[in-house]
Length: 535
Image (cartoon, rainbow, N blue to C red; front, side, top):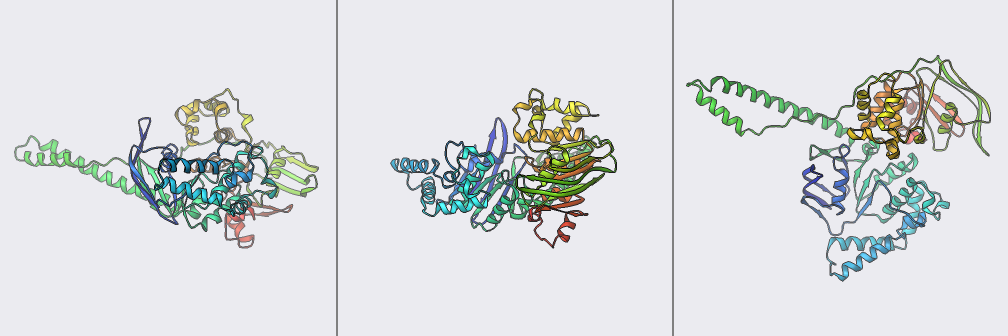
């Protein structure tokens, strides 16, 4: 289907990869991983002919069709959701024009022409609209949304429409760059089920550990300018990568010992007549020896003792007889809950059940119709939502925001913490007004950790974070001495941090006094850990 042969690429004088080779066959499900800036998206662009390699060759079967989902959607005008999903928003016309250009130039026997023709046929299929609607429904759209102007919707929903179009066209190879970023869990589970039955191949860039663990069969890692393959899912890749590092490190150490031993002999006997010939021989051996480079360790998280919050009373916050409704839609009727010091509560349940509403009530961000909200002794609440950009001073730098928030840390220590959350080198001097939404989310997380309240209320804190940052957050919250209530769709995050699970559905709140595995066992033997979050 697709072969890359000895691809090399440098950008700005920096080599991204050298002599990179890999093959994608039908039914393969491959993840491309590596640190930010390693060249993953660049490799995608080379495959898509949007960029060129310095050397090497990309080979693709003539009849192979590609479906590509970028991280960000295309510019939108007045087109409807359904027009995007069916390709009628200018795409069909663009492909037809491309075909005409190739025909005029006599290029009708090339892969570019075959692919354009296949896409044109797919978009001209009378059954395409029905397929597109099916995909839109699976991705969370209502029938009433199909004819809405896309510009009325958020960027995330527009991306879902682009994804629906790609799926409806049924390409041979799906190339997906962070496809889960814009999906809620219900849409993600549908998408995951779709891919599990997909007969083509998938090439994926993702920071979603559970997604990759469930689907990926091979991982290609961009490491030290090389492309290294590992069989298995992401968790298996991590184990094998660590094992490979230990083997390479031991080989380097052994070689260093050999070099030192030989060098000592040479230095000692080069002037001794009876040993001079042996010393010269060993010197020639050293000169011919192919020196191993010391392997770079897998990036370790920055270890720092974050400031601890002031101690709260045993009872942190209580809700008594709370009634909450949005119009006719009753969310809670006579809700009674207590948060105790040291609780780490994961809120689970279907989308729209009231998880975010409960956190907002606890935080004092949302008024309810009746009942009481009582804060315990010395309770100080921190509410983390996905809409915290307004808490940042647009004229302050990233570093200044952290230094101002920190209690006992120096500027250098703050830079170390920022590095764990992917603010590196000159990034710390950026003004917050130029940060992306994801960067603002990460910065607010850092500020929380540097001066934490004793009750943290967090709604989807891992959104926009890559796996290294998520792991850094898990470590920070594991060492956090206060109480925690959170909503997350990340199973690993829940398992690592939750010591209680509260299930919310149809206005009922059921408490499970144990971790997520205990919840799975006691809630009816649910076997799909991810699906159980929204059950």
